[in-house]
Length: 172
Length: 172
Image 1 (tube, each protein chain N blue to C red):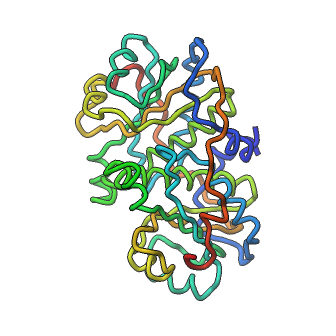
Image 2: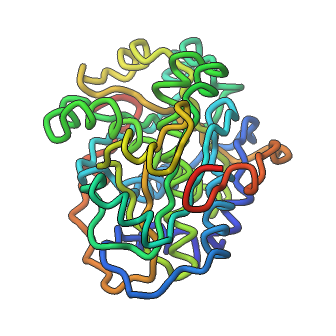
């Protein structure tokens, strides 16, 4: 699939077929993620693939952003201690979030190419997820990506037009 | 270009040929950007394309992350007032940064497909850039993306391996 096609066709998928996602595909998604840019090349990320029913059932009540029960979750975490050591406050408060997002978008687009659907959520209780995944204190879950085979691909949500969101040389 | 190829071949480009980037290509990059996911579909972004020499020369001293003088810059801004109104503190402090990063990664990959090179930087004086671009106070520059035709494509930086950054079901 060409890049432009994945970019325009990618939708946030919230309903999945009842079909597991092979571990090799989850590895491919993480391979794509680690080639995302990383501020100061810190690469503070850690990815937890969750597909066992028991773990998903524990996570679900703490993740209101999760609709239904996706076959797999990729939890993108960043190491805040490492970010702070290498990038100071900017590293901890900004790059840690942006790096998680860069990685997530690679996962979204790669998934699209592999025929998978994804949805990125931030609406979850970070402390609870940290405990369920037995993350060390410095490793903070930043985003959860649902992964599975789409049951229904929703219509594109309304987008603001390029004319509305783009200026030349200066604002307005 | 296929998605996996763009993901793995994309490098941060810091030296560009002395050749302008057509405005239509800059529009294509912003079209790609606005199809990135946006937390709560807020779409808080505004993109300023800068290619006039005078504006670039004003920006340069306030952007230590910029190496050389790229033919064009895309400044990705987010509207913090809008983020806060629609998403509270999470919107202002987190989604505003992540949305900028999602959009930036679409720009990076689309540029790759178009034969352009990019480099995303965060190392700049936000207040100074805001003034130079005459941004209203709520519109904050989050990332600057250099855009141009690569003169030299650097070797891939060392990446942490998938084995090192991935766990199954729980950490470790």
